Amino acid sequence: MEPEHLESLYPKDSRSKEIEKILSFVREGNSCQLIAMPGAGRGNLLNCIAYNTNLRKFHLGEVDYLKYHFVLANFSEVKNRPLIDIMKFLFLEFSSSLHERRFEEEFAVVDSMFKDALSYNDELVLFQGLKKAVEYLTLEKGITVVFLLERFETYVPLVTQDFFNNLRSIRNKAKYKFSVVFSVTRALEDSLESSLLADFFEFVTDHHVYMDLLDKSGLDFRLSHLEKITGKKLSEEIVENILDLTQGHGKLTRLCLEIASSTSFSQSKDTEHFFLSHKSIRGANFEIWNFLTPDEQNDVFACIKGEKITNSFLENISLLKNGKVSIPLFSTFVKENLTEEVLGEQHISYDIQTNTITKAHQVLSDSLT
Image (cartoon, rainbow, N blue to C red; front, side):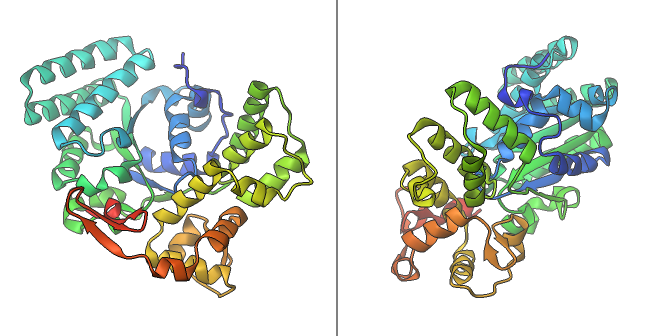
């Protein structure tokens, strides 16, 4: 029995390509990185793995799916916390996930370990308790444990070598029955100094899973769910028009569909500017823009001006395709709201009170260790 999560209702073939690649690493006892631009749907994908029984059966088999346990931990909830709180958070999510999956016997054992380790209020004791709990599930119960670390990029600026050393220590005990999926906007080896990642480098480097923009199966479900909630059915023409503008980008597509369902939207309008007039759409586009480095922003400008640009990373995350910006709605937003002249006047500044480096409204220090 699944907990009440919308992702538990998604079709079993949602994000099939990406999930199968993730699970191929897991089956080998390796870890990997799920990489995508903001708003592409990383959280949705990880929630599907964690909470959708039919999806797990589809990929892992009617019997073998019971041999895998997925622990979802959203790192945006602990992005400014010290290591002891991170270990506590992972331990808590591990214990809670067993309860949600109705592994009552295993939950009772792990929960007891968690409460016992907490009573000492010591970082080393807490980590040893977590390691023993993973060992119990993997070595005694024969279940592969997979940590799904959602929005891990929010923790990157504070991550230490000890964090990866702890993961390596758990892996050394559990062997091929322990894996970690890091959900990030950029590869860890490009975001972190090699010394920080050294202890876990071999398990994640080049183990990249890039997300496509469009997930047709998942989109059909979300559209059906939206129509059920609003009582309004969108025409195929409107849906196709939205997809032409967003190319299936998760957040932009969802917002456009919601706007079209809740307003007096008509196909005769200038749909592109109609959507761009909404704050939520502009905010989603700003989110993509602010995630880009200055060099990448320059490449986007060059593509919009018709120059032939090659940028493998932007192509991997599907922001560029065949030398062009792949999302027309984002391209128009940049062209009409962000000029090279205006951006060139924006100064980089350091705020000693907040310890942040900014360029206009973009916080550059968020991507620095």
